Image (tube, rainbow, N blue to C red):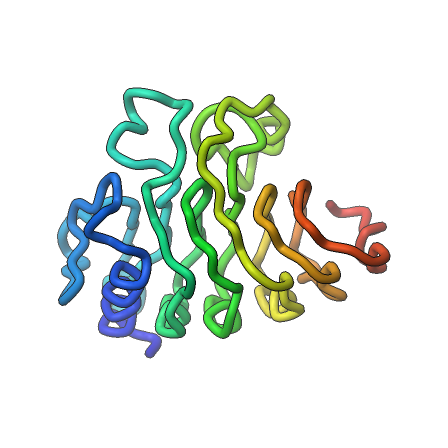
Length: 212
């Protein structure tokens, strides 16, 4: 569903699948219905074609984030991201770093076609909270300040990633991915962080890309 109603359903299903009642901060979230006109922690909306749509999700820092920049994660726990997450067709940024997610990158990734920034790391690889910035690559290489929480994504990074033709930055360090690297990446990508996973095999042709 490429609509406001579809976005609301995606958020409800995601909250229920990721143990929402036990998040560090779940202000504005609800396991039965979501109101996009109200403030929802970690969610940014914008009016697109006359409808409120979800354009950013940042669940890489909970209620203590403003008081302690070394804390990342928001207490998300779950082993599957629901397919309805693919309803978020206007989503531009998704940050899920430093939680306890043990899911695969499944069918939903094929439909979130407008994503520009995808941050799935198990723990931070640079200083402070979730500092990734599409337009400021000078911030990427700071030393780690936090190594307490880990996503443990299962399986491979799928070739479906190449369908995200607006993707500029993909971060999935310390995340337990296995298998081979994807054979294709979108030509739009400028920065890629995949250290400390369990992937094997040869580097694909895109590893020599000059625009990264």
